[in-house]
Image (cartoon, rainbow, N blue to C red; front, side):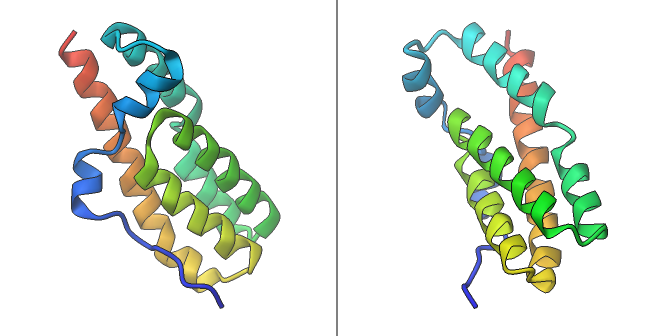
Length: 127
């Protein structure tokens, strides 16, 4: 059975998004544009932790894995590498139907998403 990362390091929760990744992707370091893209990400991803919990509760490994994969890809694209790493572990745990591992991962994913939300809110507060 593969080993999975189950939590983000404390520093990862303080710095949940690497703005350099997003800046390179967008080809700009304009903070307003970056904040707008992060808001779009959050608008589409805010419900993900709850959705993942619902798929877990239903023991729907395929839906859980698919949702984790989609969220991982979106998170990677904005530089949210701590969340992406946890989501990759969740995706793999779902593929192996390792429900004990999923139980261990869900709180970390939830914390990572809360950190992303707080990070995005802080960017808008500085506008």
